[in-house]
Image (cartoon, rainbow, N blue to C red; front, side):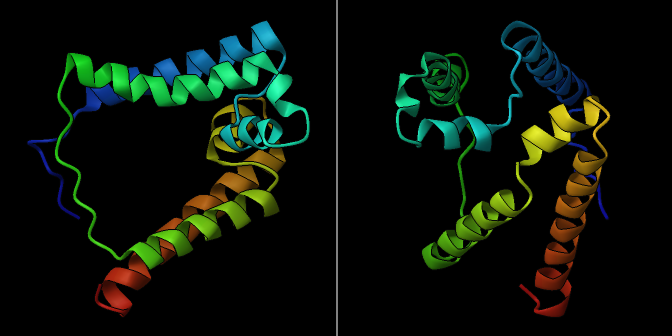
Length: 144
C-alpha cells in the first residue's frame, strides 16, 4: 500500500470524524433516536413517514450540506471509472445488505458501536471485511 502524502489529511479527517460522532451523540441525546441513514430514509418512505418533520429535515440536510459546501470551496473533479449498470448493481447490493443487517454503516458503525452493541460490532466487521474482500477480488483477482 502506498500513502498519497499530497492528499493525506489526518487532522481534517480526525475533525470530520469527531463532528460525525458529536452529531450522532447530540441526535441521540436530543431526539432519542439513532442517526442511521437507512433507518431515517426508510422511515420516510413508509406510509405516513413524510409527516415526521425531523426525518425530512435530516434528509434535506444530507442534500443541503454539499450544496452549501460548494459555495465555500469548489469540489474536486468527480471521476467515475465504472459503468452505469455496475453502479446500479452496487447500489442494489448495498440496499440488500443494509436490509439484511438491519442497518447501515452509520447506524451500526457510528451509533451502534458507541453504544456497545455486539450486533453492531459484528455487522460493522462484516461490512468492512466484505469491502476489503471485494476490493481485493476486483483489483487482484479480476485485474480491474
